[in-house]
Length: 295
Image (tube, rainbow, N blue to C red):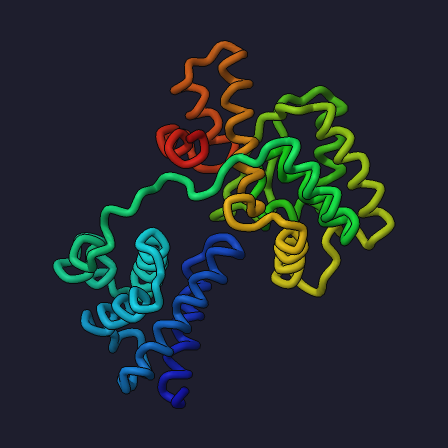
């Protein structure tokens, strides 16, 4: 990469960090920024500053990603991240989702289904895979159990070690919801409904004991990024990939929590709105939960 493009790439990464969000959001944005700079280099376009980005640069970037066989849904996410970067950099016209040439419609990215591509893992399959995970890494297995019973994202599961005792104390008080603080998307705290209390109590007790003997961690690697990679790699090596990747644990929690809320008097629509808050998607996204998690 030329000196100019390296400078451009670094600037985009800096802007991405200024945009804020969770560790994953920033990491994904940084990769998108680096990929855009790389695409510019392939096209022999020398850019030193984000203010020099033109409409056709982004069009070329998208065409290059399409040529790499990236799905429409993934490209929609990448464009959303790129628009956030451009907005932070003050390029609001290029960031406009209704831009004449850069809208999803104009880029031929519309029409992708928001339906979930994964399935809710069954209890039988979960425990079968969990046994393999435990044989490789007890800490990852415990983090995975907590993720299953609270519907956590991967980063939230990895960082849950820092909140184990707080959760343990809340359950001992009889609380029906636990607060999720660390690793959340956008840094937004949420309260998650406890659906399987007995299983969660056992998992938290075991996790507290494990963490106390392992430096306060469940997934022990140097740095959060490598810990997340460790979690994912152990899960993948144990057969949790594709539709049964770790996110399928979150799907299973969503379905279970929906039924739990309905048994406690809510309509399905109300239950799905509650689950949307349980898993950190906001109280207005019940339909999203239905289409993505509760298929």
